[in-house]
Length: 62
Image 1: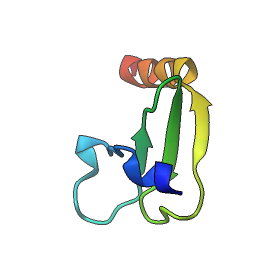
Image 2: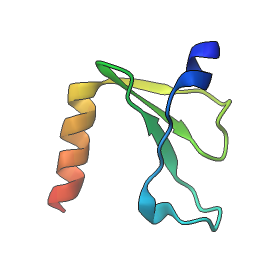
Image 3: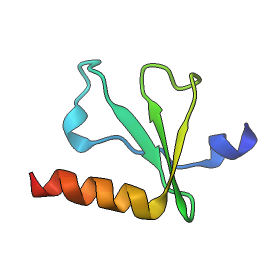
């Protein structure tokens, strides 16, 4: 758990502060960690960094 406290979590700049649903991501090395901003203790999805890059590239194409 100490390791997660040291991570730098970022959320999308378009998420605003109105309490809407969004996710945060931390990028420690060769993986991406994703969590729900409303339930930060509820679990973390871990994906390879290359998969995260492909996912975000696809979003930018739209």
